[in-house]
Length: 104
Image 1 (tube, one colour):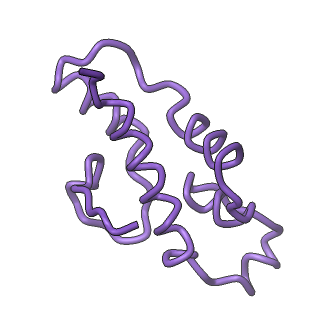
Image 2 (cartoon, rainbow, N blue to C red; image 1 turned 90 degrees about the vertical axis):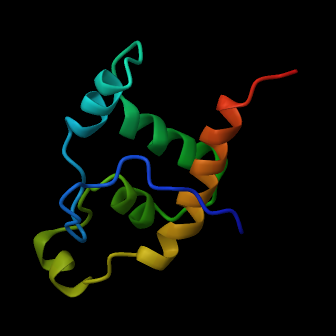
């Protein structure tokens, strides 16, 4: 994927390796006066990843900020899967952009 997209829901605090607050998307939607609420946003992403990609389980769980494995296993697995996450997040961004395009 070669397209670049601005970060829509980035942290104002620029804290690395931290999931955004669960209220960030709600605040964004209120600020933009968008109808609805963002319940299920992460589950929608997780389901889309499973249904539309070949993403490994651990990478998908990291994308939605879930821990996998036991405490001992996490001690030995110190990766954040950042580079492995990148192509899936680009695919997700392209999918979301495609939903916003109007048919002419």
